[in-house]
Image 1 (spheres, rainbow, N blue to C red):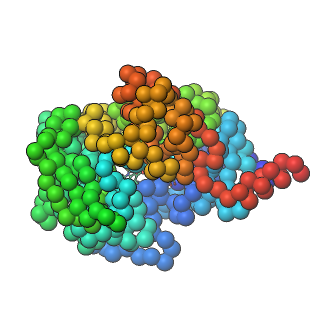
Image 2 (image 1 turned 135 degrees about the vertical axis):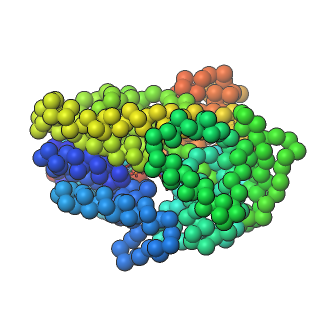
Image 3 (image 1 turned 60 degrees about the vertical axis):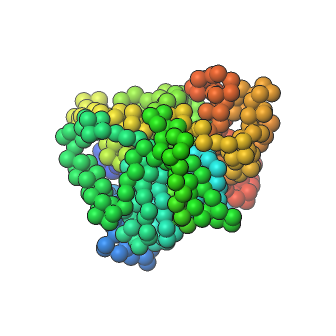
Length: 468
Ligand SMILES: Cc1cc2nc3c(=O)[nH]c(=O)nc-3n(C[C@H](O)[C@H](O)[C@H](O)COP(=O)(O)OP(=O)(O)OC[C@H]3O[C@@H](n4cnc5c(N)ncnc54)[C@H](O)[C@@H]3O)c2cc1C
């Protein structure tokens, strides 16, 4: 089946919803597709139908804010098609699948608001059951009201761990500590927070509530090993230096049944790469991001990126970028002229400039440092889908492999279910260390459809439709 849209939007998180609302307000009805069962994306993830949320939990605030955005969308006449995986993208066409049904959506303009995934970092024991990513634990809480464990340690860097620690404690878990790699001083943080009272109040709230519960935030500490037979039973933690290298002699062992790892996010760029738009390596993230202008338009005319999929900057930036992209797409479709675009987008563009300053500070504080990758031992699994260890990867590098593509051909890394989302940022570092290349010069994996798992029957249906 072939469907058509003036504007297609992939992702119904803050960026995609804001884009659809802005476009609708100037007369463009977008087709919004999202693979989750409910709209809202990550931060505004809604509970399944029939679930209610305990008013005492911090999750309720996010879900209530999300509800307001969804109500705005409904009032504007935006409808979201949920449960749809967009598994391939080409200039002018998206390939979609829902259950056994598959179809092609031809578009005039496209906004990719596909969000991010978490940056996993290997170290001994990180594949043991009970070791999660922090966002994964939060998704369980938000979507299913499941508390991942009883004695929980959080480790990594960035504000997400503070949020999740509070949410876990609200839900009844015993949170032992939040280990934060960075040691930002008040002077580091001030330029980020000055004038952003909402953010400041939120930050103070998270830290204050942890202090009230006597949950320590240990700055300059990290996890170096997870231990256990069948599942995690203890965590070895250590102090780190300014390059995040563990300081010998500082190790301690904590008994835990759950470890949450929050080492930052990486943009989901699979579709923007498949479509052929230009990307650049962002050292502050340790990953690739789409190149776009200040109006969110990529190197492919009429194709826009907004929100975390365009670079990690949080939900406020996602909302504003979505709005700008929605209006700009309407301009490209000829529904508003450049003057009207400038008038309507002015406030969002001004806010984005202000928010960009905070983003630069956070990026500097959380920039990945060499010590992160020095916890990896020869036996540490790097590609967990294909169970490939660091020593196997290093051997192939010594034998001449210089790119991710070559490692994939030799070791099958990146060929499993995650399609390289979990291992590629670590493999880039190992290649850079082993070959002397800069990470940005290491040739990344080539994207291949399907970017989401889909049933073979859906592919067959598409094939039959092509022959009809
Ligand atoms: C796991 C996780 C937890 C987070 N928790 C918090 C938090 O507690 N507080 C906070 O301030 N920030 C949090 N963030 C960051 C915050 O979610 C983002 O800054 C914000 O939601 C970005 O909005 P977005 O619209 O760009 O993307 P998202 O909200 O991530 O929405 C993107 C949507 O696109 C969909 N999608 C992606 N690819 C496809 C495809 N191929 N086909 C169909 N649909 C697709 C996704 O399923 C998702 O629903 C979290 C991020 C992650 C990854």
